[in-house]
Length: 498
Ligand code: 87F
View 1 (cartoon, rainbow, N blue to C red):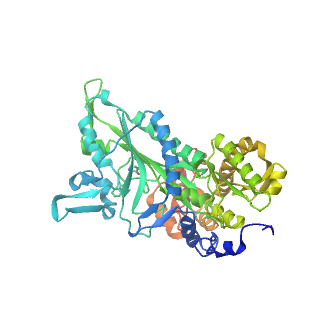
View 2: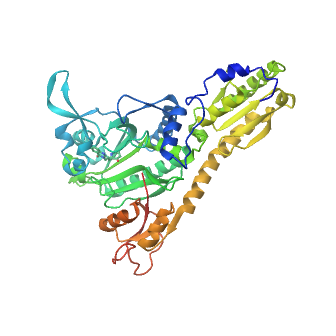
């Protein structure tokens, strides 16, 4: 701090430098879980609520979700999907109509038994997902091939009463998501949509969150029980763990048969429809946090950051007016360039204290403007990701900061991509796979596809199957499964995961 600062040092010190205001005390490396807990609270993303496993999304978190909503919503609407809203409550008889899909999930369903003191005639499930209530209506709406395709989406909340340990964003008892439910006359159309939606998810992860994903097909053991097949986007985090980002299911005719979704085709013959369902949830925010953040706190990709640029005036008695005038000009130029700007001109906080705060909150770019800078018609610009600090000319901020943010977004993605690519190891035996998984790698193995191999490998390594990449390397002639004596049918990713 320069000596002639007018920020009263006593005043600054009197601001409680308690746990609430300082940076993080835990590191990502040494105590990952404490680091995450501190980060999400100090970045003002999350507040804990009186209900265990249910979290408050504060404006900083909700803003991110709004960007994702706007982006993904734009993609699906341009593709012809329409939004709608179905009720939160699902009668028990409806939820259990397609037995296979709820079997494993039944313990997680939350129920309403009473309205006031009056016991309900039939208890109501709090929606854990909307297949059943939507398909009950679809059966009424769909009569002819002319009613198809039917492609609806909902942005809503769902409840799954988790008994495992909950973690904000990653696993909570209530979360926000979109659920798309589409119906087609033919398998071909449904499957094509299914892959396309997965591309939209990949785009959302890459372009907004700067998170690269591995696209592929889930194993029989890991797919949604109600589906013929499940596609997924899997992210790979710096701690060596993979995490499922989103899924897209081809439901075949399974639900159509259970709910009577039939149509008369062009030849006047009755057919069961082909369906998809697909979802992306607020869990994706957790994936982004874990991908980019560091020991100083949150690192936000500019495209989702509530504040993209923070300007901190450095005020001394001398030159105060000039600094404030330069700050104002800079702010207007940046806002004109379409950026989300905040000027931190609070009294009584030292610049350093302010820097810490905005670093914890993940603001991508900080601009410092002091009297010496103004004299030189410049300012200092600091990047949140690399910590790099450089002088910029004040007059060119409106052009250069947008370019810097663009580069910032790109650099986050490139860094994550490099890490992901460098972490993928192709191996052919369980022994090699175990070694690499222990070294925080993702293994690509030739697999026969049997669930027993998956389970055995999990016991040895703690790693689960993630997905089988669409881009399959050629299997050697007679290539055996990595875990048994049978022939391999495909290459599949395995890794430790959330
Ligand atoms: C919990 C309770 C009851 C997941 C549940 O992935 C039912 C379920 O069906 C359940 N948890 N699921 C699977 C959800 C499948 C599917 N739904 C639409 C998605 C994407 C969006």
